[in-house]
Length: 113
Length: 116
Image (cartoon, rainbow over the protein chains, first blue to last red):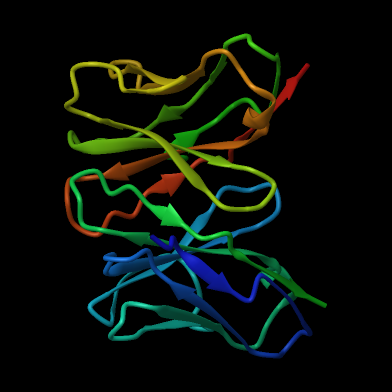
């Protein structure tokens, strides 16, 4: 049973560029959340997708956008990259259980130069 | 105000000893869930244990137990018989409300180092 998979694992971009990160949820999971984790910090919620729509959004600018596909996989897009966007981007999937346990991927580490 | 507070940036423990990682939370919602996750250097967040606000007993999962003190709003993680592989970052998180969109808020984490 494959867990949450993310790609790419590492990438380097320059300021002003755009990046797309991808996530495949755990089998049977229909909800995907994206988190940004800066060095030395806890994960910060970016947004959540369910039934191909953004259901909830954290305190992130519109430069951060996403998409969910019919197979529940998801993309995170970041436009006009800033140095401060350098972080580990984590994808988590959920099956609507009564606990809400998140299953995370290993993340995509983005470095903006 | 911080919803989740982890006051220990780093903890050291000797192998085979027990260690307690502190977590306090702040919510006015009577229904909430508390989680602990482990993050090794690989980056993946691994779910360890869950405690619901209405659960009467402290949660346990193998060597992990959650010391839930509702009146004090604390949810400390206890790791018994520490192993070298327990060295990692540990995050406490809280989800407010039941059902819905499951958006937990995370603390800043505690780094645990287990030495032989």
